[in-house]
Image 1 (spheres, rainbow, N blue to C red):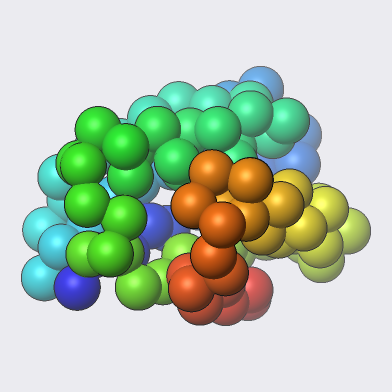
Image 2 (tube, rainbow, N blue to C red; image 1 turned 180 degrees about the horizontal axis):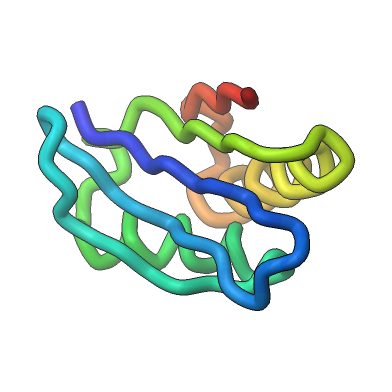
Amino acid sequence: MKKIIVMIQPFAMTQKVEGYENGHKFASVNSTVSNIPNDIFGIITTDGHYEDFSKITIVGPKKFTEKIVQKIKEKEMATYNKNNLEIEVF
């Protein structure tokens, strides 16, 4: 299965959103905090197979990650009418 990893650095202008499959990075996008949900689903859409993605891992301060997780869930529901992605926060 494929997964997406996001590292949140609060004072950095851009954040890395990366897609992995079997430990190999296949996508990397520089994103702003406000655009992270769009860039996550951009990677999924470019890959073309929503069902192949099982997990999103977000690493960063809780203050930032809570809002991002909510926006990801909203976008997933609006786009796919599902909430299948497991989102883990560290």
